[in-house]
Image 1: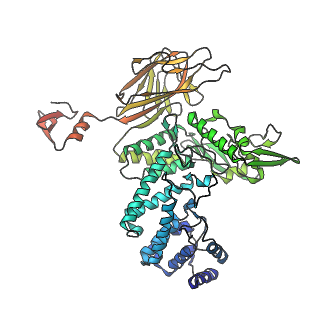
Image 2: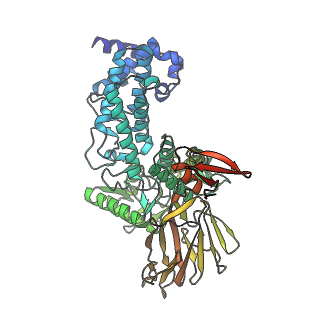
Image 3: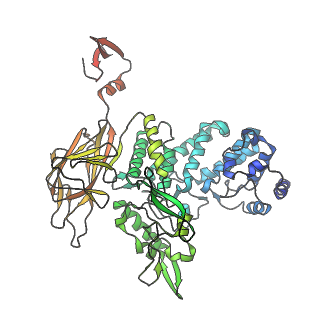
Length: 610
């Protein structure tokens, strides 16, 4: 009690901190932006005593507190709340542990190490059976977003980085734990990485990227967060997850394939040559809009999920809101309109907007906007719903400025980090490749379509390149198309997704990879009685005999609008096969030609016997 009183007096006095430390945020202090020698100073230790004094009983800390410059009332409030929940959101707990490790390393004072270990125990207790973490310990247990697997604001990434630093046993963390605890940290890290992989959204057989929150049980579907955070694929969180995953040394083949798949998916779903710009609008307000900007690309913070996965995700979301049974009200011209949350969410959801950025508004004064799907970033007219109540059809000034709904977060990952990572791990190791308008980069005349992933499609009928519904290529019947596969890849699986384009004719793929099929094998039915396209998906397994070089196919019927997703593995050349099997070999020269000598047999550089 005496120590706490002294700390409280120091805080009230306010004269014990230098200007250097108060100029920084608490996060900056924890991450080492003060001089290294400072962390052994009396001042650093006095702050460490505050950190320990406000540590929760279960080992963690709460978020958003500037523990290096608390007022006396703020300090007392945190002390009074010691039995409350611990938090991992917004770098909470992980940053306090990093600070304590630095001060312990500089001073050798075991008090700081023990507080650090209590924080680690909180992380250990909070890890879920699926390998992930939620925002708080203990859980809310209210079926709300705070209990989900949370990638939002890099929560799990921050935990995993800390665990990796601990089990690597270097720097501030050298010998801060015993060997057994380090072993646990490594296991927890590996389970966390597996959780990230388990949560990667798979859309009709193709791995995409991640939502900000996911269900805690298989199949770990994307879930909602706050009312403006709809189930989706998140450009921001996915970019940061990829940066982290690419920092893992010696990644498994599966992890490499997942990274490549996510990069390809995000590349295919960018908004090219646009940027978000802050400006002052005609009303004199600070505002944001989207402008054309060559070389800069955008992604939605929330990208609506399509396909069968989208149907599953959004039906689950609507049913969850229905089961929760909450209502939202809005008073307009003296009349109060009351809605269920399910009613609001279903009101504007448009499945044809798949893979477009989707927005929502979280503002208590207009709570009848909660969970409504909005597809316009810039101002569009207010509309009236079936009850006669007005609602917004787009984001508006204050909402646009209060949240990063669009950003270029993925661009550096795709254009800088990924190529460097790929080069580090010895070339291309396969992955998933999408052939669609989103990945098509050029149309050379009528016959050749070139895609960003080095695949091309040609045809023998001069069929021009036509886009359907933004995500499908329109192909004609009775023409042979040929997919040209990059030399270092082989196709192990192909998924064709699309629809017949006419109401008077079905479509079929009747030849694939030079094998003929009956009309009803890879069948795409004609439009229904209302003229609506029926989208279906077919997967062809080539794992027993991977396809290399060229993959021809042919369509029967009328037009087929389709995208093709190819799962590939890296081809092993003849010389690589030799190198992989050779324990010891030597190069020899015969008649001016370099040969490889193994087991008494000479091979050419290309791997054939000499």
